[in-house]
Amino acid sequence: MSVDVHLLAINYIEANESAQLTAHFRQELVPVSQHVALLIEQLHLAYNGKPAKGYAAFSSDKNPEFCEAIHQWQQQERNFVSLAELATGQLVVELTKHQIPETGYFMLCHYRYLANEYLFIALLGSKEHFSVSADLQLSSAKHLDIARMQLAARLDLTEYQLAPEQGKYISFIRGRAGRKVADFFLDFLGCEEGVDPKQSSKMVLASVEEYLAEGDYDSAEKHDVRKQVYQYCEERAKQGQDVTLQELSATVDSSDDNAFARYCAERELPVAEQFPVDVKELKTLVKFSGAGAGLSLSFEQKLLGDRVQYDAERDVLVIKGTPPNLRDQLQKFIRGYSSFDRNQNPSE
Picture 1 (spheres, rainbow, N blue to C red):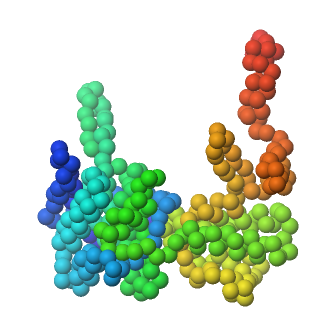
Picture 2 (cartoon, rainbow, N blue to C red):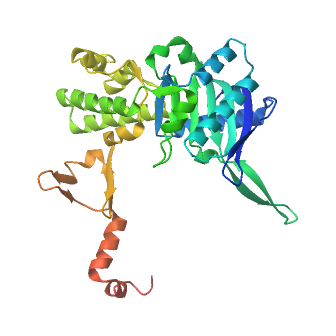
């Protein structure tokens, strides 16, 4: 993996005893080094791995200050430190307005990955780590909590320049359950949500299933196609890249790379030439799962109609053959644990 870091600015947002937020600014850029490159690479991978992301574009109906500042920076009318200061201040305003007492290190980074230039924006928390020295002395230090990154967005500067009309050059993490990041983070960025990856994923799911239903595929072949489609979409999502209809078409039907694309065009299915996906929405290509009312269940999609039978009218699921560890637990419970134990070989 090759992440080429150009510029990195770090500021700090803290809260006082009355929960009032204050920004502290670093007056110079962080020198680019091997450690910085490794940090941005980890952030890039962690961000790509976040499953719940939205896509947006700058909006004239929102506060244009951040968008204008980026334009000034691109035109070399504003330096990167000034851009980071403005962004940090704007984030403090939005956090205060929405009464969200988030603190941490605000990071603004301009970097290149493959053929695209990116502007990464994040507010990272920290956590205490402890270590023991050779002479058994205990020490502690604060580390950036990358794994719990929630307030983050990424502007694809290349797409913003070449294809802004697609409305998806800004991606952002939607946040934890019960936390509506879009309520204030999009206001901070001055943008509105556009392309919905969930809807794009549902369209992929529906169109692939329709294609398989009308084609001359047996059960095993259908399973292989579904698995390949899921793996392709999952890999694109991990790389932080869009799914392309041409590549998807070649994945669906290796005997004719354009067959699926023609099928979508002929039936006027709204599948775009290029779009982001939400891998969770595509999970049923390979697996069914669900939980509720004390029951948690998952099984591979290929088992439906074979080892797993579903009666939709009665809402009854019949499973033929249970996993050995589950079967062992059930048999012990039904027979009674004490009698089951007495049947064990004493020498074991």
